[in-house]
Structures are given as structure tokens and as C-alpha cells.
Image 1: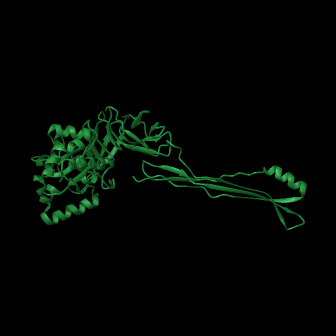
Image 2: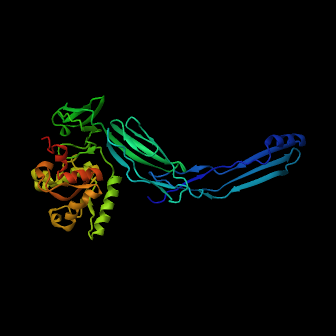
Image 3: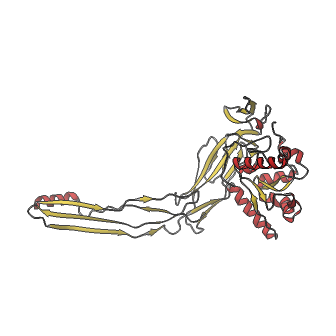
Length: 397
């Protein structure tokens, strides 16, 4: 983020003569007093996102005048005039002006080891880099004073770290937690495809019939706000959907950072990896899919284009690289992605010879962000996502 500034201007009031003394003096002299105090109005500007910067305090000026006027004359006599100006003052040397975290989203499972984002405070020469950690919901996730985040119960919350040196500076981690010890049971309730998925323990979520065409009882499965997770990994395919309202507004922050790291690594190997398509909203996907249906027919379109709500692109964690077409399959870039994408948290989502399992044809260009730990597990297994989690990818109809 470019430098952001937070400016504060305040009013300083400085009366040189206590009014009680002036009043006594005036009463004795038969004078009438008028006290006028002039000062600028205080203003405050906000901060943006999670890396605010506080740079300087603006100058302020206060002038206090006490004017005496005799009862017999219209002439006025100024008793005292004082003007005091405070010079602009930057933050003290060594102040913290920004915080960056190694990750800003965390999908956890109850029972997992704690995770801790690495914190970088700027500038590097800041004197006091002490941190204050807090969670918005300790029933979902707790955090200790070192930043270790521990999953407690199913749900979502925000974990925030604030600079003790400069409390205006903070950063946040969005935490989603699933509980594998809880059982999710989902049954179709209405003819329009709506189902109610209830979790033992009292939690109830609403999703679509495509997510659970039949009754499911999986300890590692959870549905939160209409989104299905297995072991904390968001799953979107022909069986499991996203709500129409789900819209992260673009690539997630972690996905964007990981892709930048991947691009740099490819560049070091003499290759260029770019994004030709990443985030797509539900509405955009719906238009795109029906254009393919009109051109190629539904049966063909269903082999390479997802229906709205079933597209990984809506997650903000999927990227089509360089050229979204079969011509990319034989390129050095496609080979590099297949061998190296996992190192940066990505998998080739629709591998070769897995069409009957994933539901989509081989797409060497389509990568999905999972985070480095999960990407390595999937890559090392030699399985696609559906095989690894023992799930289907089939439209309900």
C-alpha cells in the first residue's frame, strides 16, 4: 500500500489572566470586559486497510484577547493580548508507522496446531516493536501475546495485532474455523433445491441441494454460510457450490501475494507467467457459461466451463495462466507450473487423465491457491482434490 497519513489538528486554549482576577480588577475600575477566544476547529482523517501510517501533527494557533471598555467612553483599552503557536511536530524518532503480516487469511480446524503470522513493523529502526494481539471472538479462535492463533470452535472471527508504540497502526487476520468433531447432516427440504444443513451442537447453515444431493455424515465436512469445507479447505466443484452473494471483490490477498512470488520464481528460470483470468463474479460466470452453451451446446460446455456458483474463479483463489486453451499444454510454462506451482501454495486443479473425477477436462493453465502446506500435501499424494478428500464432482441434474 502506498503511504497513508493520519493528521490531527487540535485547539490549544491558553488564557494569560485568570478570569476571576480580571473580573475583580474590572469591578474595581468600573470596566466592562469582553473575552474573545479564537482557535481552529479540530479535524481528524482516517486510516486505510491494515497498514496505517501516522506521520505528523499539524500546527495550531490560539489567540486570547481581553479588552476593557470604560462606561463613559466608547474608546477601548486592550489589557492583554497573547498569541501562542505550536510548531509542526513529526512522530518521535523510532515510532512504528506500519505493520505487514505474512498472511491475512487462515482456515483452521479445531485440534490443529496453532498458526502464527510473521509480523514486520516499519521502519526497521523503530525503537519499540511490541505487539498487542486480540480476537473478536474467542469462542472461535484465541490468540496469545506472541500471535499464536488457536482454533476453538466453528465459525469466523478477526484476529488483530496492534502496535503498542503507535496504537493507530494495526493489521488483521481473517480466521475461519471448522470442527471435525462435529457432524454435519444435510437434507433436501424444498423442491427448488434449497436444503438445510444442521451441525450437531446447535449450528445451522443454509446451502444448495447441489452441495448435498443425499444425506452426508462426514466428520471432516462443514458448511459455513453456504460454503463447504473439508478439513478447512474450501471446495467448489460441480457438487459443492458458492452462494450467489459470495464475492471477495478480486483475488484474495494471500492468493495475490503467492502468485507474485510464483511469478518471480518463474522469471528467475527464464519464464513469464501471467494471469489472463482470475476472479469472476457469479454474474460474470453465468454470462460466460451461457455464451459457451449457445456456441457449443450444454454437454460440451460442461466439460470446460463451470455453471454459475460452481466456478473456482468466484473464490478469488483460482487463476488461468498465460493462455486458457489446449495450446498452453505443451509449453515450457505449463511444465514449470506442473512441477513448481505447489512450492508457492498452488495446485494444477484439473490434472491430465482426471476428467472423470474432477468433472472438467485437463487444464494445465488453471491453478488453485490452497496455501503451501495443503498444496504440498496434494502434490505429494499425486491425487486431485476430489480424490484426496473422497468427494464427487457431479451436477445434481
